[in-house]
Every structure is written in structure tokens, then in C-alpha cells.
View 1 (cartoon, rainbow, N blue to C red):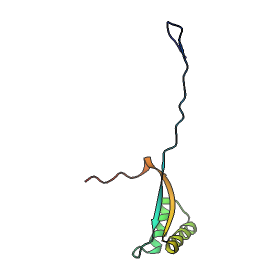
View 2: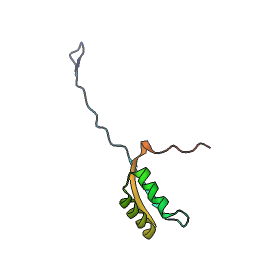
View 3: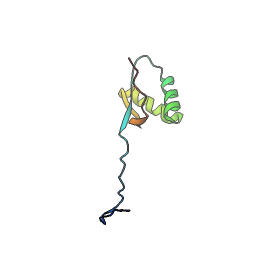
View 4: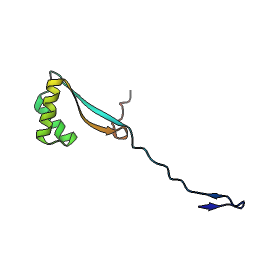
Length: 82
């Protein structure tokens, strides 16, 4: 609290921070990437267990698309410079 000569009192205000917007990480099916490689990538980069990674891989294989996670926009990799 601050007080000035003209007896004005200023109250400190707290601002509420919003969580950063999230990006969904989508996995698409293709004809070239081996299923075992997809399982390894899901385990290494998304911290999934082998069973969970296999379930997600099979979902992508059957439905051609799956959301594998969400990341904040602040942690996304930067775009390549031209």
C-alpha cells in the first residue's frame, strides 16, 4: 500500500495468469513408418509405457489419426529459418 501527499491510497492488485494455450500433437498413419518405430517414439518422447504406446499405435493404424498429447505453445520447437 502506498500513500501520497494528497492522502490517495493505492491498493496492490494481483493479476491472474492464464495457462498458456495448448497444442494437440496428432499422429497420422502412413505406409512407410514401421509400427515398432512408432512405439519407440511414443515411449521416448511422450513417456508412455510399452502397452500404452502399442495401444495408441494400433489406434492410429486402424483409424488413421490419433491425438497423442498436448503441449503448451511455449515449449513447441521453433520454426526453421529460411
